[in-house]
Image 1: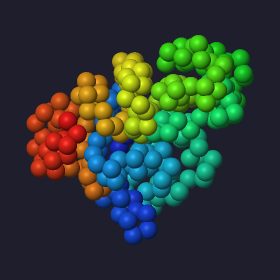
Image 2 (image 1 turned 135 degrees about the vertical axis):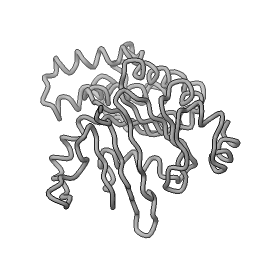
Image 3 (image 1 turned 45 degrees about the vertical axis):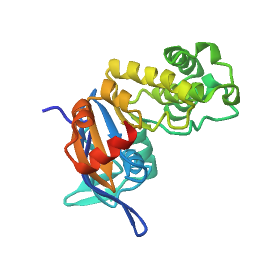
Image 4 (image 1 turned 90 degrees about the vertical axis):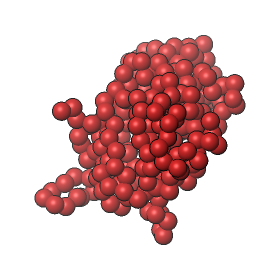
Length: 254
């Protein structure tokens, strides 16, 4: 049996009295494009942030490539890892946010080079060579010397994707990567993500882009109120939803 790239078992997350995730169980296979859809506040983004321990889960287990995230098990007990150990795990997990979070004082290529130099200790020459290839891959080789303020939203998001790829992750998390973009800029970002899927990158994508989920996704989960309501192949869920809540949601977004 192939080890799942991501495995969630009974994952719960609360913020104070607000119970956001209420026992999430799911598996993401290697090389799979796994799409998460659902209304705002359903827990999609929180779950994504739990995968790389940006948020600590309150109960359950989360594993990436067979390794517990954020914890070590001894006997029947889980012990939280040190920050330095969590940081080592995060090196293998790329994340792209709604907002691009680029360093404003750095050019596009400097943004892409920064983490490999600071985190992996790579030389500037090695980091620059990879950054040049990645910027070319996302169609921005001519913008390497531009600062974020000189780039459109779509271009900034593509730099953010290149920056995440620079750490050579085994898993990429996308948190509604096109939701902050003007409609005419969405296509370029989705094209980059399609290319990653074709190259076999394991991806979990929180998205409102149902066309992308249908065309590129291998699996789709509809979440609502902190639980998985329905899951299956994207075409099956989107064209023939079985649950009334899924039908109601899709009637508003398709």
